[in-house]
Length: 111
Image 1: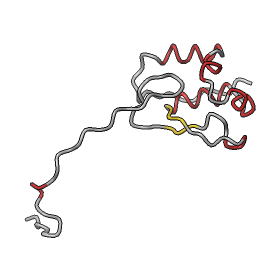
Image 2: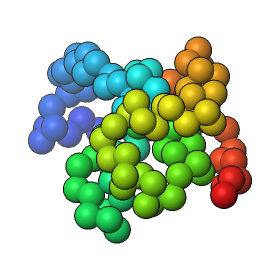
Image 3: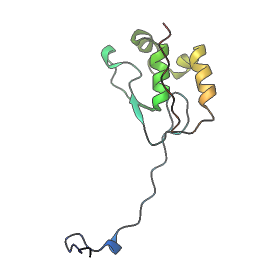
């Protein structure tokens, strides 16, 4: 028989679940983020970056695969400059119809 803890009240008094806040869009692809949000530094911390933006893990992996820290520093917060890179544009077009929690194994760096 289960005990009833007076300190916590009965199990019937549990509050209803509140609605989750709306998902924030990914900084790179613009899709809503899923359960896992990566807070990415557009300008790497090693280059003095302090601002963070929400991203999918797969989108962050794409950036780190295609750009060095120096290149990311030059682009800064300019998403359009990053999307001008053919590999990034191809990735964003491919991932556009995927589920927000979609993930794949990271690609090898192409340098």
